[in-house]
Length: 582
Image (cartoon, rainbow, N blue to C red; front, side, top):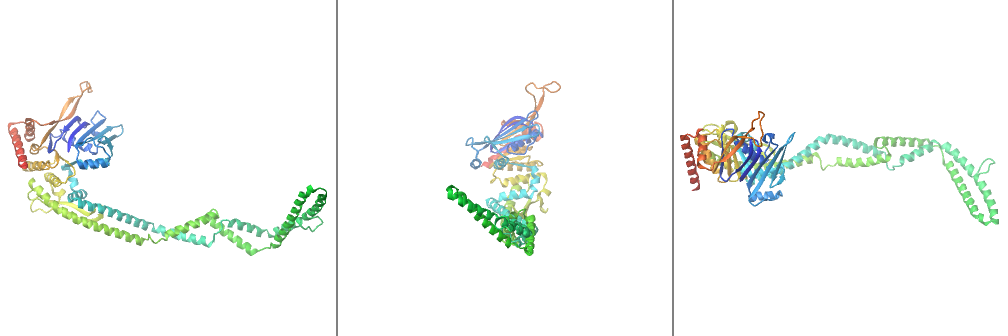
């Protein structure tokens, strides 16, 4: 319940503090007096959309603060949001709106804690619900009607919707996976062909040794220079071991040196080390001479092998150009695409399997939707009966009402399109509510609809903005009694022009505009003190002032007949309340 509303610099309001109570709270006043500004402030403090126009001219900061009663369910929710309580009785919600050169900034607090829009939206649903005749658009929206019907259906219906949301999410994921696979199937097949060709080509190349290209290049050089290598090896052999001309070979010279050093050692043993080195050198030269001779003898021209080597070199270089640039990188690429090819050939995620998965999820979703439709039809039947019973006292004794449920494609909220069908006059066929209901009929419908939710409504405060527009006489009296009925279970705030409704109020506030002289010596351009328009609200606690306000609503002036009519309204309202109590 809204206990107190404090407003600073909001539209035409400079400063205002209102204290509301339980039961029916009514705001009256001339058209344009500022009644809707107060409801706009309530909407703003609970996170509603605002623009720079809400900031009072000449100021840069707006503050709206609402104090609400503290219920156990609200306390539990605030605890989940890690918002500490101020006391055990009230929760304070504030919103500060400031203007900058380019935009506006808004900050919302709950018990002094900064909160975001999502938290404010959840909190709003727990505190206040605003209903206006302008909700005709919502009544024509299948989504809004569905929400109303599901809320009326209770916990079992809401739980079934949650199951459908989960089933729809699973189906959508399976569908997206399948579509993605179908979309990429052509690319997959093209990639499969490419990788298959590459694997076959690399496999046929027998790539085992990363050093093969270097080794075979060396072999080609040897085969291309066999004659040169034979000649040079023979030359080395002659120089080291056996020379054909008279010039001694290195082995011969080392043999002579060995003999001389051997004689010298007989006279000086210190030369033994040098003698050993010469002997080792001679042995090494002899060994090299023999090996180089054998090497030269082994060399022979092999045109066929040279051709094979040239072909292999061309093959390996081609492989390197395509998959390299080095042979080592080409081998690594071969190993990588073998794994990728295996993944592309994986049959576990075939299109057929994905289609089966999608079909299974869709079947589960449709079954859940069918169950939800059954629950909705049951709730619709109850709502039809209840709403008609609520409309009959509102001078609509012959009204017909039906909740039409038409199958649609499954979604996250079911597979139903829901329309409110309405016929206010006997003999007329049912038609969509928004196409046939007049303004007065729509007002009564919205009020009756809210009455259907009064026992289970999560919000403790119900706000009605001129819900009685377009009605008078007996219908206005019926609306007044319905609002009073609602106020027995919920706090009701109502903006009205109807004296019949205002007379039923537990608290009556008059809203009007006043012109004040600007304080602090400010002057207008003409040199006179600046005057400003402000909204003022008076709590009509005194019986005489309230009677005069009702007379103004009824007759436009405080004539004797109007005063008498106002007194009769107050007496009638008092009698109605006593009858309800007894």
